[in-house]
Length: 180
Image (cartoon, rainbow, N blue to C red; front, top):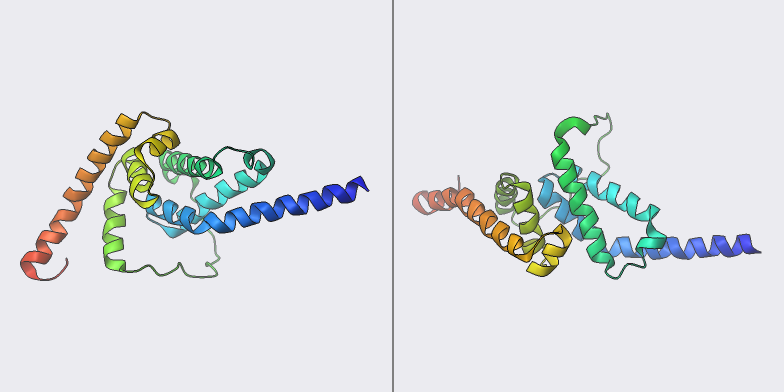
């Protein structure tokens, strides 16, 4: 009888985990994509975070702010992955089952993602959290484990870099009437 209870309890816990992941998956994929500039790498990182979350789900689900915990796990994994570089490249013969979802206004998005790739990793993390995840300065500081002043300075530096990188395209568009 206790075996059935455990199985039933496990089914309920799995259902709770599945429901939670369904609710946040699109946002986590988008964040990872913006950080990596690549859907495949972003999906790999999200998958590793979700695997780790599943392993620790009984404890993680009791967290005061589960969304903040998952964001922190995701961003730490992204930053760690960036530090390792190409040391963990895995080649495969298989093609993905489905193409990446289409995004509105792809030319602008590609320009932005290309520019984001050139921003320092810490500044990129701050920009993604602040402007794509809509976190406050304080929430961003908590996720990145730094002072709010650091978030503000990294935001200013990151935005300045983005403006510098994106300004030539805007200037060209104004003078020639088309995008470069």
